[in-house]
Length: 298
Image 1 (cartoon, rainbow, N blue to C red):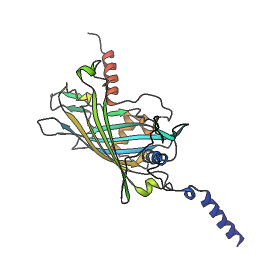
Image 2 (image 1 turned 90 degrees about the vertical axis):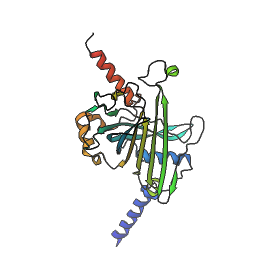
Image 3 (image 1 turned 30 degrees about the vertical axis):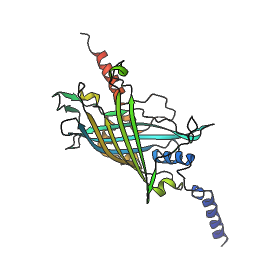
Image 4 (image 1 turned 120 degrees about the vertical axis):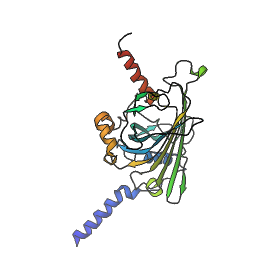
């Protein structure tokens, strides 16, 4: 009998000191909680624990005066980790570091495309898949440097929480030359991420993380490797995905390609990564410049 009482007492003590005993509901209107909600969406409560997002979709052309064309399928992933950081004035927030790949696939077979017949120019070009390392986020804090509280664009619908995020992009194009303010060629794109998560999983701290789904739309200039020579038009990416519970849940087409050609992408960058971010445009420029340098002199 004494053994039973001691076991019960030990169980009560264990519950009292467990994370469940301190579980609470996060308040999206509270800036500190809002930052925590975003960290749970992107990574999880635990620092330096990798999280994987996967997405799958289609890629279309959009040219004025002609029907849209289905050009490719797309299979992509982003592997990231977060770490808590504290600022004496802005509070405790987090930093996210990541790297990502997306492979262009044949929309009929699902196979990764290595070369592409450009239907506008008639030229066969080498496909340069998206492989950006790193793609790191700016630190997020409860207060901005200007003293503005952190706020989420979030709405609750029944058992679900939805968070739309629009990212308009307009900046110097690494391939655009030195006179972009005068003659154009700025990089111009829009990315839209729409997250949806179970409200209990996202807002109740008894859950160590959340596993949202996400839809992703991107409208941008042609990929530079398409060699469009200034032709008017855009490409539209439309994909859906989710945070996975492990890297092993990625489809084989992604895991096999990473193992063969992109081995660093099985893990995120270190949390103190200070490198500048890469984009398809910066990666393509480096590759093109290296090829030109290696080419025999004419």
